[in-house]
Amino acid sequence: MRPDRDIDALRERLKMLEADGHPVDSARFDLGHEAADRHLGGLAVHALHEVHAATTPDATATLGFALGLARRAAPDKALVWGVQAMAGLETGHIHGPGLRELGLDPDRVVLVRVKETKDLLAAGEEALACGAVGAVLLTAWGEAKAMSLTASRRLSLAAAQGRATAVLVRLAAPPQPSAAESRWRVKAAPSRALEAEAPGHPTFEVELLRHRLGAQPKSWIMEWNRERGVFQNGGQERLELPAVSGGVVSVPADRSIAAGGGAVRRFG
Image 1 (cartoon, helix red, strand yellow):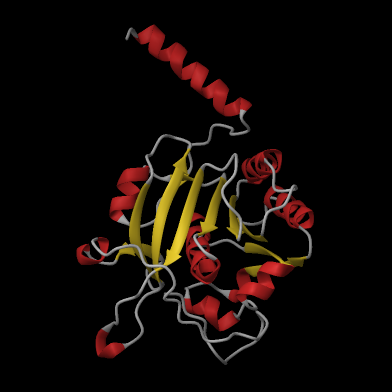
Image 2 (cartoon, helix red, strand yellow):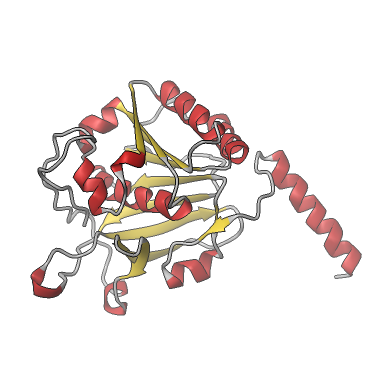
């Protein structure tokens, strides 16, 4: 192909991205997982990423993966976490010590509870566009007319406007058309014990379903290392295991985010 045709093709691609609600933005973040990062080439920081739970019992693990995404995208900034009421009832209350177990500072988390999907989306847009936060995590439950392609485009535009990362977690809902840059499906996976039989890292079976910039669907087993704040490979032998659903060991968490002490929720 001639150079001038290459330039014309690039211009057309850029126009398509802009028309679809995705302003051109070079800021990227990686996961810390070597194989996944090599496959993806990074994820857009100021964009929307969508995460689905493979099954309802995988909801807690899915939230753990989504929190890891948010931390990788904006490690030193505040996180706004919007939770739809039904999702909170199904997954349990957010627990401050559990956030610390994932390497997150509860003092940097702003929790917003809403009843309806439309209110969740409105809160997400406002938080993303304000320019004061690093990431916004939205936990939605079930199918809803409000969760439309237009709604996802509005979230994407708000993320670009506010220079923030949007992570939309869909629980008990199948994938549907979306303007998200990436879409993931998450299952809980068994973790490996650490030295002295200490509980292992939170472990996830993660499948990339869609990537707007062309990365093909692919799956990995990922561990979350809270000390380093990265996703890491659980070991080559783990990649050869069949898909495992369930395996979540959770200690009931019935305290607010501000509570200290007590039980810690673990993923994987």
